[in-house]
Image 1 (tube, rainbow, N blue to C red):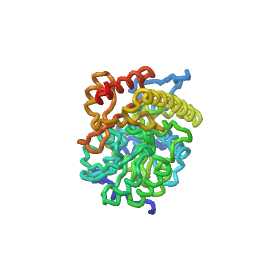
Image 2 (cartoon, rainbow, N blue to C red):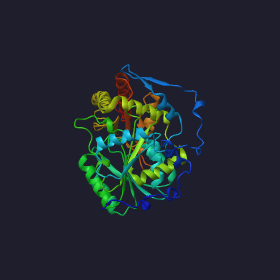
Image 3 (spheres, rainbow, N blue to C red):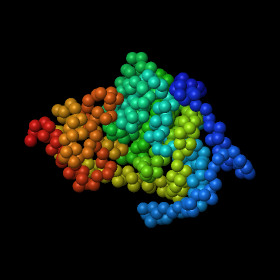
Image 4 (cartoon, one colour):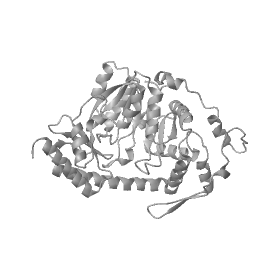
Length: 414
């Protein structure tokens, strides 16, 4: 199928009513050298009580944010993001994903969750069908819920979306125009869609004229040898992939910086939403991230990612060994190749809800029942999600033991 030129059919009625902010569109013009601006109501920076910002890194290095850069971060800034940060991120996307389409752009926002919500709002009308992995991220379900859409669950297994199941849904006549997927270290299942399946999924999207929302916050938390499979963005010849990423898992969740990459026209539509809601992501957070990335360079970033992967790889392997020791016969699971989650299918238990929300709570072990991740809000699930990202090894062991004891009691083995 040829590249998409007109995205009108994909846009919601709300989005089609959006207009550029008369003031926001002047902000980039104010940055032109020699420009005298009497237009925008920018506060005078002399009123800002901040003079400098110094941050000590874990290796003992002190980063001093230059006064001029701090000043830019403290002031209103262009909606797409601080221009030097956007340039840095675009170069990173070119290096990592090597996009085949030249017509793409980027937008920085207050975390990928904000971008998810805005993208769903941009693409979906009330009553629309949307294709979404089964199970899926509960935050995505929360973002879609107020829109009143009909969720069409696409079955997955340990290797991600099952293309044959997706094709069956498409051939059955679904009216969906959007597929939402978490292709790497999926939340909650931990699965990573293989390279071959991604090619098949993209081919189906092209054949049936779907947009793909590629939510990939765990891309840099790929833990197995060989690196993650190619992204949907990297194979997008038609302009049908909107890719969302975040610094939450690799720098800091509190910084709240995420970014979207995709067709220029769709990124432009997202900008209109951001103009009207937050105006732009935190300038101070953007300036801090930019200065850190410039300090590191590509080699420093790669070394940082490698350290993160080593940490999570060790945690995953420890947690899986504990599961083998205490949960064998009580549940089934697949080893995740990325991310921070293990997805248990409980043996002999069809509904995990009360077991996890009541009995596990009483035994002081926190897990998440599978029903939280279903496209059917009234569905039941015999699955449970566990995270190995934060607990100490001792806490992991004790938590797994308590979980095992609960399952044995539930199955009458004690």
